[in-house]
Image (tube, rainbow, N blue to C red; front, side):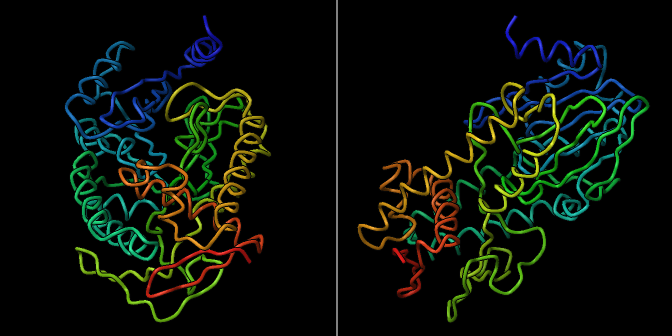
Length: 358
């Protein structure tokens, strides 16, 4: 038996079962967690698909339960592989739905929020050098993915720091944004278990994707400086997005990791892959990896000024076209680190930002 299998076996003795549910996405299966306690609880649900629902029903049946037995559904964050079946399961079971209070309005208005996020993303892509035809293609792909998620009504909004009580355990609710604006981890202080969603994954680095904030950005948008005179882009839903404003997702994520690094944890049950048993060592390695990537980008920028799309192509070649927004998020996150350190500055030229060595 592997270390991961032993960890999951010990968790099962405490009534926690990992249900690996298939998804249509490159990340592979998503880990949902069945907690056999009072109330009977499911953490995350998998995407909105018949295949995922059938697999989830079979996984529940293997532990002697049905969807209709669920009494509580808990959501870690807004990504579609985690929230897609929430509404269906809640309707069938009557379970309460628990999620971060700031995420509740987003889940209730899922379709509009996804449309608004596409407009937000398009504005950032154009400003950072991605050609318009590539932007249109990526927006079409995003629209086609939308059906894997669905709206859900949160019946129990959770405040940062609140306790989610069970009969024989309790979870501390901790907001850890970065990978998404709504990332929430649930800490069983007595056992040292952390249910981390995609906040920390063992085999892959959680990408801090640029996403429309859950609340409006303040003036300047979380960027290191503020630019004037950039025409806002209008989304399909009619909302305007100022492309000169964007969140600093990687810096936010690193701040969240620092908070998690200081916690006394026995295991992190991740949203994908194996449990994490030495979270401190893994987080330290992630810090080093981000430093290495920032240094590599600085070396490219020091050669001559480039926009973020050009930097992504230098780093990842054709992947920067097929996965343009993913790689753009990576580049901008690490450039934000360089700007914050005073090593790089932004220069706008005809509506497109380039980065040059300070």
